[in-house]
Each structure stands twice: as C-alpha cells, then as structure tokens.
Length: 141
Image 1: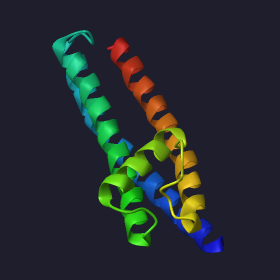
Image 2 (image 1 turned 90 degrees about the horizontal axis):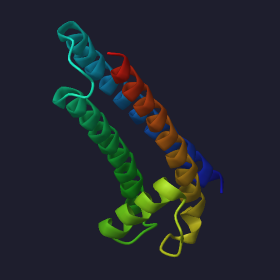
Image 3 (image 1 turned 180 degrees about the vertical axis):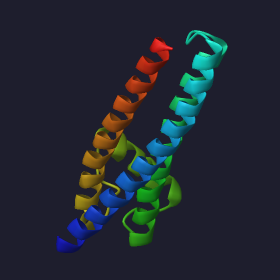
Image 4 (image 1 turned 135 degrees about the horizontal axis):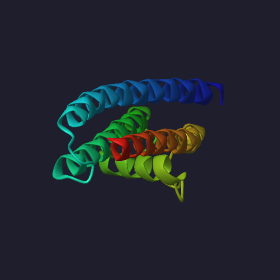
C-alpha cells in the first residue's frame, strides 16, 4: 500500500504541475488576445470572441488529454492494465467520473486509480473555474 500511495502522490504532483503550467500558458495567450480585442473594440459575440472561447475549450481538452494519457502510460508501465486502448479507456473513465469498474485493473494498483479519480475531479473543477473566468472576462470586453 505504501508504494501505491507514494506513486499516486507523485502522479498527483505531476498532473497538478502539468495542469498549472498549461493553464498559465493558456491564460497568457488569452490575455494577449483580450488586450488586442479591447483595443479594437471587438464584441465577445463576434466570430473572434467565439474563436477565443473555442480555443480555450480545445486547450483545456488537450490539457486533460495529456493528464489522462500520463496515467494510461503509468498503468501500462506497471502492467496494471493490458494494452494501450484499455489503459487509455480505463484512465479516461476513472479521471472523469471515478470510473464504473476496476475489473481490468490489477488489484495491486487499484488505490492509484482511485486517487486518479479524485485528482481528475479536482483538475476538472479547476478547469471549470478557469473557463468561467475566461467567459466572464469576454463579456466585459
């Protein structure tokens, strides 16, 4: 159990670092765009405003994808799940919704996947807060 907790802690730390760095980069890109939009007085309901929103969503989706794949590769490396497809599928359902079954996960590593679920929910919440901030800021421009 100790090894599982250490590994889960390392994975949480890694994914939080990835997420924080990704949000930082995305925020910088969006701030640059917001300054340009404010100078040109372009509506948030314009095609450009829609594009900013779409890019924010795609950026968040990509960020979560990297985190999900990181867990999937860990599961393959540990031999906890058979095959890439199963590992990505298992990681995705665990990350996004605490999963529905751990039948494919090796019993020895189930605690890691349980903590992935909690980690995923927190990171999804962080992304939601970020996205709401972006949308709110667009409405003010």
